Image (tube, rainbow, N blue to C red; front, side, top):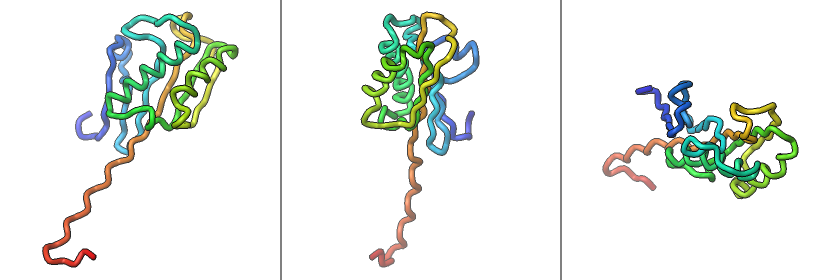
Length: 146
């Protein structure tokens, strides 16, 4: 949307075009919202259990942030959706490895399933970029700035 100050990032998954969404959206106030990410890379569900799927899903989200010039240090909130309570520890371990130094607010929610039953985790990420401060006006020539 031209003139709104909203920036959108797309990825290479076909569902964005099919269902009409963006991988990430940055609002003028500095809030960045990343859509739900799973362990689908290049259109293929990557192998592995809950830990590997969480690492891959967060990797997709962090790649979207990278498209906006941000990294894991800008993440302020995460949500992890898992299909089985038994997977909480493995998904939590992946989260800790990626975000321990950042310590975002986080939620982990048990859900009944995803579009493809081989997926066991989906993540959402929110990040923040402090809006740039406007430049201070130059002091008039000859003005005392002390």
